[in-house]
Amino acid sequence: MFLLAKFTPILPYPGLIFWTLIIFGLFWIIMRNFAFKPIIEALEKRDTSIQKALEDSKAARAEMEKFKEESAQFLGEARGEQSAIMKEARAAKDQIINDAKEEARAEANKIIGSARTEINAEKTSALAEMKKDSGVFALQIAEKVIQKQLMGKDDNESFANGLINDIKLN
Image (cartoon, rainbow, N blue to C red; front, side, top):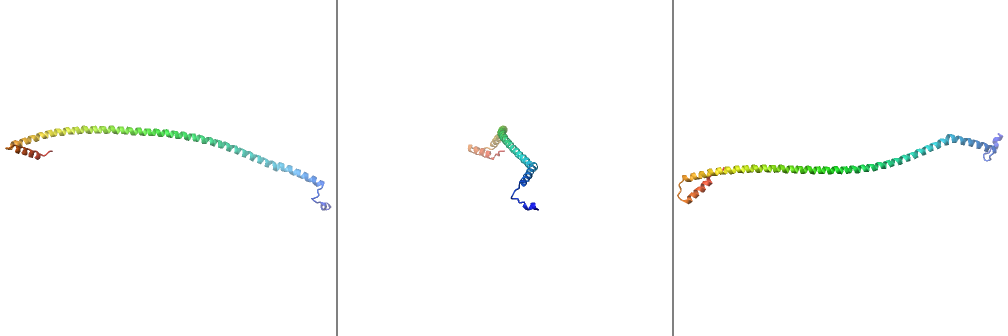
C-alpha cells in the first residue's frame, strides 16, 4: 500500500514514462495493423471508385454528346427525306389532278360531240318530217280551195289564211 499512496499521475516517474511509451507504441502498432490499414484501404478503394465514376460519367457525357450529334444529323436527314417525299407527293397529286382534268375534258368533248351528232340527226329528221307535213298541208289547202268556189281575190286569201290557222301542227 505504500506504493499506491505515493502514486500521483501528475508527477511522472521514469518507469511510468517507459511503460506508457511501450503501451502507446503497442497500441499504435495494433491500431495501424487492425484499424488504420483497413480504413486507409477503404478510403483508397472509395477514392478509386469515385475516380472511376467520374471517368465513367465523363465518358457517358462524351457519348451522350456523340449521340446528340448523331440524332441531330439523323433528324436533319429525316427532315430532308420528309421534304423530298412531300415534294414527290405534291407532284404526284398535281399529275393525278391534271390527268383527271384531261380525262374529264376528253370525256366532255366526246359527250358534246355525241350530243351534237344526235342533235343534227334529230334536226335532219325534224326537217324531213316538216317537209313531208308541209307537202300534206299544201295538198289539203289546195284541195279545199278547189272545192270552194270563190269569186274574189280577197275572199281566196282570207279563206287560205283561215285554212292555215285551222290546220293543227303535229
